[in-house]
Image 1: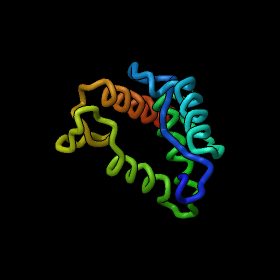
Image 2: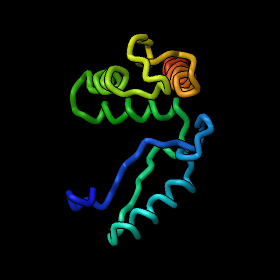
Image 3: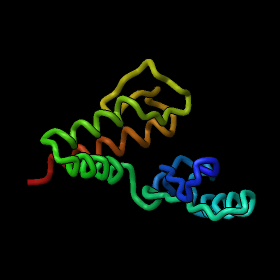
Length: 128
């Protein structure tokens, strides 16, 4: 960000349903923002758009953003891209492919992602 003269850093951390690691908390992000700004002698903003929403709402946000692409299948394409190319498994498992993406399926990150995906799917089915 510094070398490219960028002021905003976006991260996907979430305090609402995190697995206990302190680096996902809002207080940590605020402290990191201050430390980076002081250390680099330039003001940075760390943007955390997922901080206060759960994983189901995160999947819905991705779907909604895809719908805004202007193509008929934009929502499915964006969700598919996230499933295929993003990764949260603490063990780095890229062998087991689930509906919600790659991962071991049993570490805390995989469990959170799977539950969020399942809740989002249930919510989608319940809509008229």
